[in-house]
Image (cartoon, rainbow, N blue to C red; front, side, top):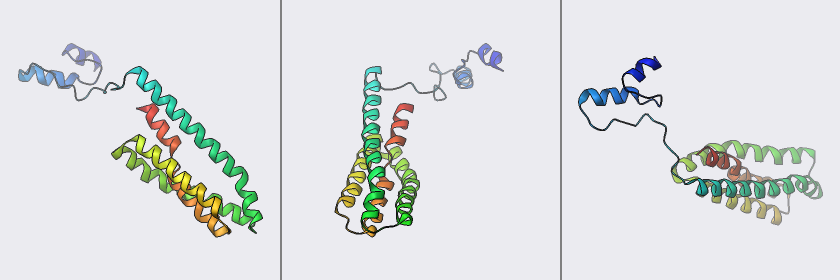
Length: 162
């Protein structure tokens, strides 16, 4: 199959059939729509984007690490139980599942930078709500925006893949 494609003037990039059709129809320019797109970023810019995403993920994980360490003690201090602490993590997890689908579509439509900004904004709102919470219900409500918006790792993976 590959040898037939190469014999007809095609290449291994997947554009062989389109090239053969263009040559047969008398077109000067073969169609390249089947080829994989080249990266549109210069290597220096791509490296900078990867470094920025790495820093964003590190800052994000520092915040998550501090919150996951302190939040159970904070909830218990407010009169919560072990069930309350489990519910706090469950709210965060449900928010992650829902947020991943929503933020993925937003990322595809509007870009990765917007999703990173929304992720940090949602985290700031959620962490601010934790700071002003006076009841365990307030703590539970604070975990929802954090879970919905916390998508920095997914966006960083998408940036690296791009």
